[in-house]
Length: 225
Length: 273
Image (tube, rainbow over all chains, first blue to last red; front, side):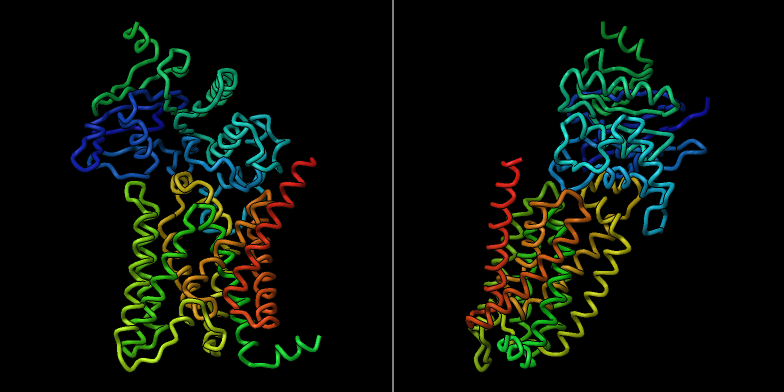
């Protein structure tokens, strides 16, 4: 299996504060990776570097042959989204396809099909003309996930997606992620909680005091028992 | 309807109507993104800066419009950077810029002898000061803003809804920010003579605030904002003509009344459902 994302000697700092120090890891295609670490440890910074939102001081991120940075699906922390924003579900999900639109101004039929497919995959096609602000927390999260799915067929990155979800919704959400992973998506997820049930992937990337380490989930859990 | 014929028989009223309509369209379009991104104070900060620039240009005997444009464009970059900077206290710094510009402009005018300026017309606008050059400049600006919205509507939506996601999928958000900053500056500079430094930002804010009360999609917010902005400007201009009140203040009051009525109607309708 070839790699999806490779970090080579990646170092990132904010001023004099060294957040990531010479990180090396490999994320293979169809891996489900959970990124763990204390608050402020650099989890979001690592994700931002993968997405190209911040430049590393040194080192680099290398993508697999058929992966483009613009076509990575990204689900940001929901605290950053205005939950009362006036938009319909389809407007939001369609915006996921903008990365593949190039310089074209208007959505094509294939973009609309992709958006509807993502909604269907998550069982919320019926909500496509509903106002985002009227949805429940779990439905809103699904809409943002559908937007990320419309952006990608390869790699999905999620920044603390279970925030503000109750136990039942969270469990359901994780089941959906497992299904997406089985269907071929590589998933990288920052988890806020360190409960074993939140570590649902096959790999763990742990960040502690700027040191980044990669484990298999079973090894990681064993070492913490 | 003889009053309407009479009103439109004055050349200055014709110019005020055209410039007002064009600036209302531009302000509503740009306002949607600024208000929904919670950057409404930018309009206020820039309008006060425009006042300061106009005052200094007049005192130094420069052409106010051509002096104000670069000054306000530079200020807009500064203000936009501040309001997007989570570490800086953007709100306080914009308030500081507003007050300082107003103070510098007022001092420059009052300390300069031999300069005859009606301070009120700068602060509250004067439809008599609108010339045909304002009409052509406003028309050019409107064409640019409308084209921007037609061709970049989807990307503007993505940036307004979720800037981080927009960046992640490769949208050059800094370029759009720069275009917004320049556009917003031009709207304020061109519209200030009509509505005044203290009132022009209301054209940017009110239409969106009214439209979001009853629109469920971003596309509708954009369209309704423009319609509301245009209708309220025409109503304000007509009322100001009929009761001989200042145009800028009347337009703002019409917008305020529209906002209150919309809010109450939407609340009543939602409660009944």
